[in-house]
Image 1 (cartoon, rainbow, N blue to C red):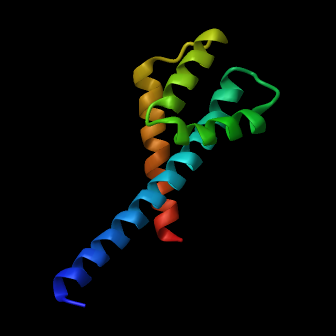
Image 2 (image 1 turned 180 degrees about the vertical axis):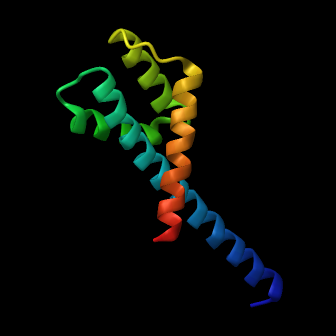
Length: 102
């Protein structure tokens, strides 16, 4: 195998790792934010709701945010888009840091 092919394979492997890492981190973030949102909305099914949001990562990059925004509004919770985006970003940072450290 030539050096260029080895480098290409290494880059492909790294890219695949990063994609899988982000998918898992976003799913975990969505679940944790889902637990917070369920408490904010006073839902009794917090764990089930968190699981539904964890799966939202597979639906698209903004699916969880859109779902949360809609559900919070329907529940009458006063959470701005900026607050929701900030919370999601902070939780993602924490989750990624935790996953990286372990």
